[in-house]
Amino acid sequence: MAVLSEELRAKADEIVARYPDTRSAMMPLLYLVQSVEGHVSREGMQEVADVLGLRTAEVEAVATFYTMIRKAETGKWLISVCTNLSCALLGARRLYERAAEELGPNAAHGATEDGRFSLHEEECLGACEAAPVIQLNFMNYDRMTEERLVDLIEACRRDEPPAASRGGVPSPFTTTSRILAGFGEAADG
Amino acid sequence: MAEFEPVLTARWGMDAPVWIDEYERTGGYNALRKAVTMDPDEVIEEVKASGLRGRGGAGFPTGSKWDFVPKDTGKPIYLVVNFDESEPGTFNNRELVERDPHQLVEGIAIASFALRCHQAFVYVRGEFLYPGQVLERAVREAYEKGYLGDSVAGSGFDLEVVLHRGAGAYICGEETALLESLEGRRGQPRLRPPFPVVAGLYQSPTAINNVETLSNVPHIVEHGHEWFAAIGTDKSTGPKVFSVSGKVEQPGNYEAPLGTTARTLIEGHAGGVLDGKALKAWTPGGSSTPLLTAEHLDTGMDFESVQAAGSLLGTGAVIVMDERDCMVEAALRLTQFYAHESCGKCTPCREGTWWMTRVYQRLEGGLGRMEDIDLLVDTGDNILFKAFCALADGAVSPVTSSIKYFRDEYEAHVTEKGCPFKTRAQREELAAVTPRGAGVEGSIPLSEVLT
Image (tube, rainbow over all chains, first blue to last red; front, top):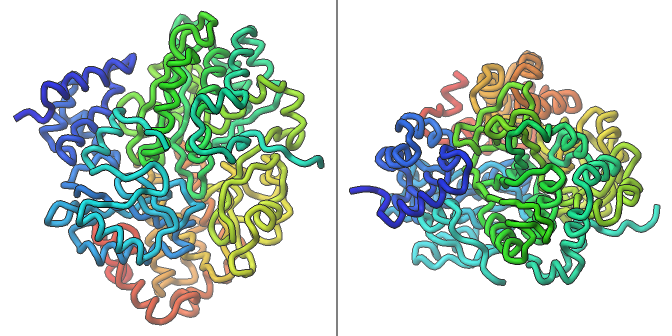
């Protein structure tokens, strides 16, 4: 089974057409694969190599460099907790540990067994005015507390995450990856 | 000094994001319409005369950079916008785009016109999902209104703008690593020369500019270089959006003229140190700039004054630490950041940052030795200026500056066999785990490293 359907192959061509040089489409294509698989498998890398006319190893070399291209199984809801300095000064370490306790040890390695959650210890998210800050599928939740974090996790167990601090309700990880491939702009409000 | 009128943040009181109708209603795109009636070189001269310097950290004169881009090589000229904001403590690019995206789009259009560039790329930090979506919509609106695409503002000048999402690598904010990434490669810096202005994207002449830098450009074109140069200091002209975070009452982005003192930013704009505590240390320009202390609070936040005080203006990101914060722990966390983000290309940076985290963990974990302090200094000395890019130099800043000003805290970690800012229970907990990346394959519990 191919990872990219015929329809997504057409999207892949659209991505390639954005650039003067085909290879520049590498990262958005990896995001496109991630939007299907929920992560990027070796088969996915082969298909990207196929589109770009490269060897799989060349794609793998790139995919393994970037943390947002997820090689491990990834949950529907990826929680990133910034623990860099501005957030650390305001208690981020404890937040991360609380998330790890709630989600169990597998979340930080890939995904929880039910495939619902992944946990990532994040570097500075560029939102230090709202420290400590976390992201749910790359949407920001400002001035996070342990209590709200636990509530957020509970809400995600029901697939009903609350709206982010800006930009509305986050999408599942696959849909988020489609946005990162360059398909999806901000709505009104 | 006369009351400062906000320039870059003038629309921040409006409903965010400011979409195109509101942007036009408040004078938006007038500068672009004016620019396309000028000779492109005239636009460059205007920006040069304004004294505008890059806001991404290095402070290179923007107009000169545009001047250095050769216009007659027969190769296409590219503008690459660096929206990979990820220097710890820095968050002005994000808010500039989230609130007023068209200000950046207009800046891109004017810069491209000046450069004779028909293809601009915006490298958007991957984690900036929503800001990227805002910018995507703003770009589409600008196309629909004829400010991008064929014949920009009816001028006959064509411009395509493409957004490109990064994927979680701090190093891609370094301009040559960014180019590698945009070309579909691992984000590893290139050796210079050749500089990107001569051989950048696809080996073509390329100007790389920061979001805040370009956001200044419409205002310079609209109001003229003299107006701009009257803001700030002689050599550091114009307004700056300073990001203030950490232990302050009101963290946030505050726009002020370059040269405004750190005291004004911290005690005035940001409401002072949290809980009325005493300030211990602060960064003037993100984590890669050497720490300063309370005695430096009257330093003007401009390129020259901060350098004279022994640090760098960087991105103008002020992170405040107070009397309750442990400087060894802060330096440890930042060193872990650089070790994590080192691209691995240069040995001093790749190995040095990793080994420094181990020494720091030993100190913080209570098994440090007095000679560890000089070992850190020595390791830093073997990293500084010995790598392809400035990430390595930045990694040394928190180490050497914290030792310079707070050596007594380092010594206390040795004599008290642990962090004096922590209880015994907290110390024991600390000795049991590796804080960053705990449990990740290949990581070793601190207790094993130490023995």
